[in-house]
Image (cartoon, rainbow, N blue to C red; front, side):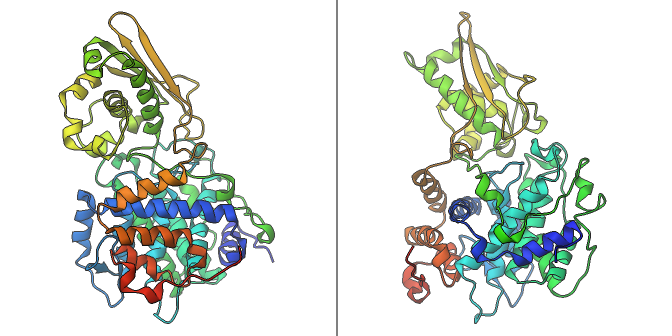
Amino acid sequence: MWAKTITGNFANVIHGLNKNHLTDMVIHRSKRMILDTFGVGLLGTSTEVCQKVKQYSKIYSSDISSTIWGHFDFRLPPLYAAFVNGVAVHSMDFDDTWHPATHPSGAVLPAVMALSEAFPQKKKISGLDLLLAFNVGIEVQGRLLRFSSEARNIPKRFHPPTVVGTMGSAAACAKLLALNQMKCKNTLAIAASYAGAPLANAATQTKPLHIGNAAKHGLEAACLASQGLQGNNQILDMESGIGAFYTDYNPQTLPNLQSYPWLLDQQDVAIKRFPAHLGTHWVADAASSVRRKLVENSDISLILDKIEKVIVKVPEVKYVNRPSPNSEHEARHSFQFVACSALLDGSMSIQSFASESIHRPALQELLCKTQLVHPSDNKPSFESLYCEVTVVLWDGNAISDRCNTFYGHWRKPLTKQDLEKKFQFNASEVLPAEAIEGIIETVYNLEKVEDCSVLNMFLSGQSARVFPEKLHFTHSNS
């Protein structure tokens, strides 16, 4: 019998979706998301903000512990493993982005990975179990975002992963725990009371905590619901529930389970090539193209003094309008910084946001010549925005180029080779080569993996030689 409420409908779908519902496209895209998220999370373990939250989390102890990515000898209770690994994923703003706007994987993957280690040893969590729970968490986020038209634009008031990410993490953990419909409803209700964080903390060390908290709080909500804690069983139906975050909240029932259409089947995610706000990726590609035109017959150092101004046409997004960024976090949220860096260097990288890169005189001089323009047709949506960069020279000549879709956007996804290169580069900062190759092989074969604890072992830095008995893949004819 189909539920009479939106919340009951969501609970039925969370409970009812099974491995047979997963399509080849959903499995393919979610594997790419998982591999990319592991990579940016591993790289993020070395950031200052991640070091601080690891130190803070050491005050907690438990008989049950889960892996902290990139650490062989440091484990934490599942809630705080989800928190630390979630912070690591978003610590450099390097994680995937979806439309309507959110970072879908970082809130879910650390939670289900931590929870997978909390089960009794005799209960193995298979790769298919993990894929299903992960995709339930992604799906819930996408469906909730589609209950609001304003969610389709780049946010202005709150950071979306703190709302839909918390709900997605909760749904994923409820699925992994095999909670019944009533407990799934309570999971969503409890998670809603953990949701929300103001966007004012963007471009600070606090923003990565949003993803860590979403992972932790979703896991906590599912665990509390499993113990019988109750909440409002119409949390998704009410304006005072999840509707509190959206002025135009209009919830709808989910499709029938008989032939369930996954949102990830219909639209891929964007996977970033460099660690910064997604909107800056249009800027980087446009500015890099202008740079190539500028240096066709000359060296960039000879051209810099000839530049009168740099005009960057982008949507009006106030928290990414930062003309004079002073820190790596501010630089990651600055249209101006990325435009000038790409003009100077020809491309963006992790090193672009190092202190010495941010404060170099040539860049600071170019920033002073840069201005943003907000054309009326350039809407603040990751689906439709564009960037046009124009360099005006003192002699009156102007060189321009426009980016409508950057490489890495869901309309122009990274190749498998480039995705792997990104993962390998990121993971090599903290893991040995054998563990890196082990993660790649395991993720690509996830639907055949009998015991996904092997992933956590690789993520801690162990090699296949330590536990050959765990490398069991089921064989199929496909």
